[in-house]
Image 1 (tube, rainbow, N blue to C red):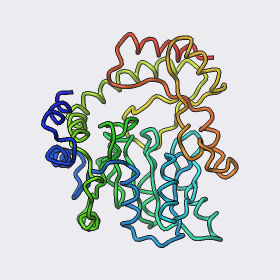
Image 2: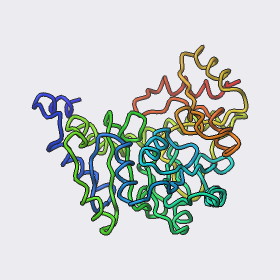
Image 3: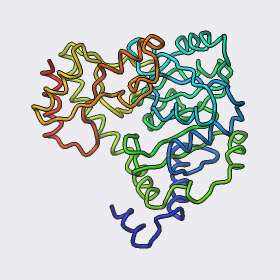
Length: 330
């Protein structure tokens, strides 16, 4: 609050010094070569796709559980979305589901790049996806803080998007960082000329600076809350997502794949005065943009994956209450 009020009092609500400070602090954590601080993830995706110089009609491979705005940006650039299913019991696409989607598109324009969303903070096998030889745009908005081996999530792609929206791991009330890890790709981003209205305002940048500085403490709090929920979830019939590879989940969220209807679980939670949400309601599959038969695993998960409250400011009493809800789910 102090950071934001200072920006307001000094009448620095447009792009300025706080945005420069954010880029500097984020660089220490993300180890990138160059970064743009932007007003929205949609703008970041638009610029990243344009920077790849794709031709009109060419395909962009995306998970069916990607945010709905992915499809809007791809169509605005007159490109073609190539929908990929997710692996069974997982929130992200695998090399096998990606290859199946690319083979399915054999009769039309082939995919010329892959857009990888770390859905709910889960990270697919990025090394395997990279071996396909297509340029990769990585969205680590929900996987910030995850390290695979010795490599940070967000370091595998040609370009990386780190959203700062309300539902992202780090939230500044809006905005995104678009960055490149290596020098060659960074030179492409350096050539992008931004208008003032496209840059991240100082008010949002001030919030983002604090989020980076508090990230370690917030992640520890998330870990403690998730541990309490996990103990309850081990005793019920509803399932957790399968985690691929050996890396520690950043506890962005606490999802459960329900064996019963979403409607019944939501109604039961309401009686306990707890809000349970559909994890994938605002995804491509959840909004009906992907035919159910095309990506059956994603479609099934979009109907029966529930999110339970998990955020750093959740108190001990509230945590206990949610854990009790999980333990007694119908």
